[in-house]
Length: 388
Ligand SMILES: *Cc1c(COP(=O)(O)O)cnc(C)c1O
Image (cartoon, rainbow, N blue to C red):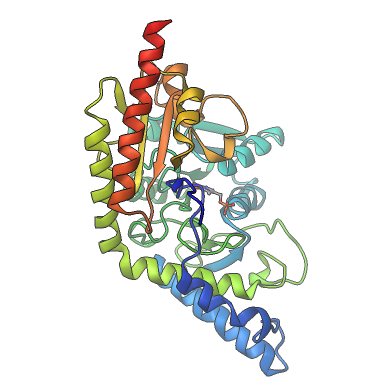
């Protein structure tokens, strides 16, 4: 194979694990039946496969299988959660609370609801990327129907205090939604302990296939009502119509099963690689770690670099490593990352930032090579600057 850059963009997407692919393959050609076909074995066998994945996901969240609604990914799950609650509860209230550093798949549905008359409070974050619980306390209103706070941030990896947020929402009878696209399989999740009512998931950030995700929808204490956003055959208890995508669902289940089983050792591996990278890079002057130093995903390192041009930095890194500046979802635009500006960064620091998403298949040798190249790139860019 040619020398492709080292892949360090595992927050954008991950490769499908070979074991996941192997589990999926028979469901394309051999076991191709429609899981809704109740009259023959073709349907029964795919129905059984879907059931198994549902159980794996439910177990991973400490939920029940009936509470898992399959979707096309976390974007759809977020849309279903936010718009579905707004439509079902608008008579109770029309105020929603979310956070400045959320993914666009949360912020944009909220902005859309604003055009329909809903009021949205967007909480700021502290310098470390965590929300201030006092700010949340102050934001609650008698007409608040929903709080949406992500589990793990896709740019800076910070883990929000879900247990405390869940407690505060439950006390007030407000529905709590969490986008856990980056968290599933990476950190322990428990919808009971965290008092979460809705949780968005996706497979492709955890070595599963793209195009499949799920929304956890609480059925008891309290039972959450959702207005479907897609109407049709009444699949997924009427909340999301459309023929179930069996191969992807099987892959999702397998991916989460592996991730949960290997979570502890994988996190050790990732933490070791991240620390190695950070120890080497932080020897340079003017390197800032973005996000809380410990309350974060093991595989995430996000840094801002003083005294270099962001575009020139990325260009210099490209031949050796595949990394992101800012959010992958907004990398087609040149606006600085909304997450980094929410931390209070200047435009220069927000632009000159690099997100390393270290993953399951990265090695120590790769990290050494990346650190070395990163350091020499920064040094030569700074030298050029002082020359002109
Ligand atoms: C990737 C991501 C999404 C979007 O998920 P898709 O499955 O690609 O639609 C949403 N939220 C977060 C935090 C993400 O990282």
